[in-house]
Length: 113
Length: 116
Figure: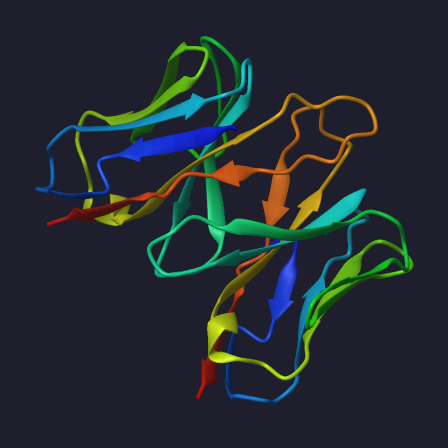
């Protein structure tokens, strides 16, 4: 059972377009993280959202944590080819003492010049 | 600063052969350590995690095993590889969980394993 569902699985767009990626769960998370992974490399953290309703911006990327802390979205404005990659969301469940993150299956984004 | 190393970067092994992948972390002490497998550029499947030397927890039953002989060394092994073991193996570390701190996981560069 996948705790975090990401949609869409694949996204192929032209440079300059806007897009939104979603990360949904029926579980509540104490925080949610977004990572980006490029081919042949490990994921790299983009942002962590902690408070319900929180919005964080990272240049052209806007991240939002749902009010109930069950879902999150990533919006990219004016996408560029450099944004191409696999975007993964990961939830932190403080019910565990380990620090375990639950990862979604990811959204593969391709931005064409 | 902290760094995490994995080797080898790529590996091609025949079915039934043994496996040993190594991960080391520098610049921090007593980290939590994780082994993940990723199939075909998709999500991460947690295989093993460790909160200290000799402490290993398994998430998924399989023919793989893990060991942590030193504080900052994490090894993934198999006695006999299966075709289904092919994939991209990622090691990660995080700080020990403390109250009020949100964990970030820092990933290594990965090992691409192909079992033929």
